[in-house]
Image 1: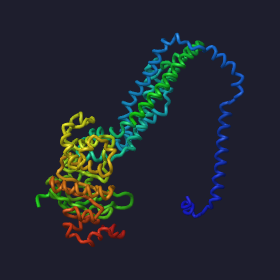
Image 2: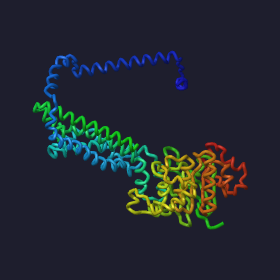
Image 3: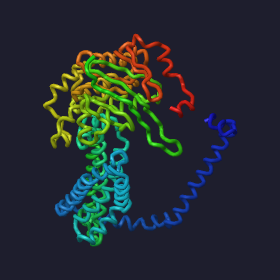
Image 4: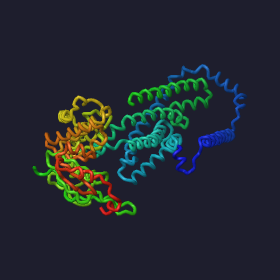
Length: 270
Length: 262
């Protein structure tokens, strides 16, 4: 620290440095408060509305109680649909993202133009939200779980493609060089040096993505892409609040168990 | 002395120019031979071209002049499949072990045999298990057979480097090329590795060409010492004929004008 100050040709005493630092933190705190206030203004934040609306909330809650577990069997199929949309979408995404990441990693790409193209494809898949992909696919293939699964697949290709590519770029290239020298074929070098080194992280990223995709799949139902989200929307529109409450319990169970399972599996492979 | 295993004749290597300069001449007429059963050590200061020479011999770099012959076959003109096959006669040992850390020790040694097994299964990640006895014999040769099932990531630096020698031996090479193999090892491990390389040369009859930074190790283990400076070999003697001032002259810093002229 002091060496840097000396290099700049102006030595700061510890006292002056302290002064500078406290002035800087004052500016940062002030800017933070200003940022929050403008956000509160833009979103029309009026906490008093929550108090006047309290009896409305109480009314809905009382009408939602007790949850209608008699209609639980009707919710099981959509629940399975929600989970399967995520599983199918994640599986398709892995199959596409792994080869895509190989050409989108600087150290394994066969040629510069292919690298740029692959990076662009990954960026496009990522920056368009899965909700928008779902809307696009619903207009293309109609309502139902399939457009939801496609939307999740495309968005996940973007998210995982980037992470996989970074994983490959950070990989130790030593074994690759060593195996190339033994006369092994290109594919053999890849499968014996690259894959064993990155496989655990690759599986970890995929499991994490699956967990995220189950939550995404719930929301996608709201735009007509099937699953329990669609049931939720329908029950809301029909004012069947007790059914809504039951569906929320089911959702809670799905999300929490997916999260737990994914975390447990990731811990085992790490 | 028997017929040479490796012949390097008048080797030149000019790295492509970047910006204003006209490229760096790393090798400038290097000439040497390596016979089966001998351990030859190359000494020289940083940037004298010793690693570049090794890489040209291994076919990792294509020299801009001169010739490399491995068992009489010129290697510098080859590419693709023929280069891969010619290269299989040469086992390479690097500064670090370059093992796949998540695989077992024996799996890493088996990977050395991948060049001679070209089935689809092997290409997709299966190991050539019929080679396991051979791999175990190679591990035994480096004294680490009892580590076979262990993960490579759990080995110490010296052990890992010896496994990388076993991997190179699994390839069934006629010569080993070692590029500063003891640079990241402690003195004891370095001693052990040099003993191993000497045994591989004297007992198994492989030619071993080893780049080193330690003149003292070179004197004790080498059958011949090559001194390299400015891209050429300036002496080539048995250790007892190498004079101290010859060695120290290798490490004298040459001024910039001389470097440019070279």
